[in-house]
Image (cartoon, rainbow, N blue to C red):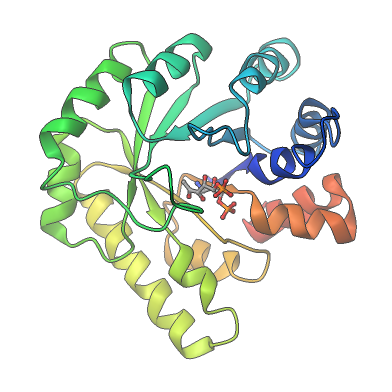
Length: 248
Ligand SMILES: CC(=O)[C@@H](O)[C@H](O)COP(=O)(O)O
Ligand SMILES: NCC(=O)COP(=O)(O)O
């Protein structure tokens, strides 16, 4: 089955937040993404609400429930008690736990599944008990042992951090090395019984090689590159271009 595309609307929210005005409109653009064939919407609300505001979650949940019942809502973030409360209130199909410090500009590493194993076990089960699928952000070079620890938390999937792969857009040799590393980690995850998602700085140009190397990839979540593409081509066309790059 081709990899699913969840459109991350954080970058749209960031643009909106430059003014005290309601545009670009998050719900309207999310609707366009889903109409164009995206399989879900991703948000990553951070404690300072610099991109997604907590008040954005209810209208996005309602959009999916009312107009796109087959689509999925994916909420990403660091699992503080406040974050878990927010998630439980908006009942996403998937929660992606990310080890972000609030001061980080963006996500730049995966979990230490060894050092944080007990912490994650507690968080994962608090979410799974509510019926949400749980995915854990994972370094691209996590070894077999680290993946085994990820599995022990009870999580359903890992999301491979593809930032370093995205960063070698002008270096084919390094890109080939990175995609192989991601592939090896994805293979460990598959063998351990974990589903595999991927995200961060994925583009129309770098998706095909990743999808070819990881044929069991379940979902990619994409925001920054897709939003940039949409400025050139329009939102719906951009979503279709990314779907095509995923093999649809
Ligand atoms: C979890 C993750 O990979 C990030 O890519 C993040 O969700 C992107 O959000 P920002 O663009 O707001 O940093
Ligand atoms: N989980 C990764 C994500 O949602 C999007 O990251 P990016 O495409 O904005 O880098």
